[in-house]
Amino acid sequence: MKRLRTAILGCGGFASRHAQNLITLPEEIELTAFCDIQEQNAREFSQKYNDGKGAIFTDHREMFEKANLDLAVVCLPPFGHSDEVELAGQHGVHLLMEKPIALSSEHAWRMVEAAEKYNIKTQVGFMFRFGAGIERLKELVTSGVVGPAGLMSARYFCNSLHAPWWRDRSKSGGQLVEQIIHMVDLMRYLMGDAVSVYSRQENLFHREVADYTVEDVSATVFGFQGGALGVIYATNGAIPGKWINDYRLVSQKLTAEFTNANNALFHFTAETPVRTETIASEKNVHLAELQDLLTAIRTDGQTRTPLREGAKSLDMALAATQSAETHQEVILK
Ligand SMILES: NC(=O)c1ccc[n+]([C@@H]2O[C@H](COP(=O)([O-])OP(=O)(O)OC[C@H]3O[C@@H](n4cnc5c(N)ncnc54)[C@H](O)[C@@H]3O)[C@@H](O)[C@H]2O)c1
Image (tube, rainbow, N blue to C red; front, side, top):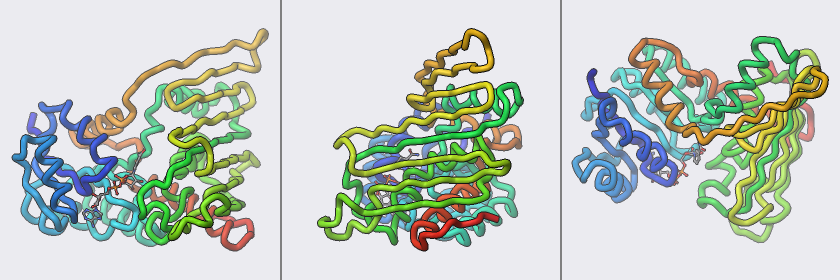
């Protein structure tokens, strides 16, 4: 089996998570190139993950031109995306790309168009789709055995200043677009495309922090075909150092309570007495998303979350932000 010549584009905080997984697959992956506008970051990655033998680039255009790649893992901050999908497509390079894939719908759909035109395999980093509990729930919901989903609620609580770009709305898109988009994507995955959204977003706790222009409390209600509802409430003013992210889904015959994507209680509410199934797993969801992409590359198959899915979830998150800005419900096409 030919090893895939693989690059990391954007060698920052989160890229390490992917690098750690990539080096567990030495028979499949050859980490050959590292690109970052900060040359030192790329050098440090090369040192840490390839004994300093990786090619170093500070310009992704040059990397796609010269590095003879099969795969690139894109961990750019939201504002850092430009023409990398077009270039990857032209050079036949498959992509694992972190969310959100862009800051505008127009840019995201241009990416989709390029990936589909050049027929490259893409996977967006919505890793919760690979959680053991989410996989089981998806099976139950799509097979119809638990009846249609009626309500999903999701909570995202953290308290961190994050990176300077993160707290700048023009660079990150805001907490909902940058971070809580994970919950938006899970809702879409389990309940389908939303048809409406109403959102309120405020900065209540960080008004004194210079350049903090993103929301730190938000409440968002999505409407789905047939009347089902999804509620996401979030804050960046909760417990310092803790990321609390849990969710519940209620369908006609099931109430599922998630501690996280791998751990949940499923209550089968149409059975007497009500039966409870426990899902408890330590699955590495990031590795699973990578392996799903590798399988798609080897078999010319589909990934679970191609760029098209990333664009649709981005559109839902952007519509929520538009609703918050206008104080109006937004109807989605
Ligand atoms: N899936 C998840 O759970 C998860 C978790 C954290 C972050 N992320 C996503 O990963 C992405 C990166 O986040 P991060 O926390 O690693 O950010 P970061 O700021 O730590 O790292 C980004 C890196 O990209 C580099 N960079 C910026 N613009 C560039 C360009 N044009 N060309 C090359 N390099 C460039 C920066 O120098 C930096 O080294 C974000 O989109 C974020 O949402 C996903």
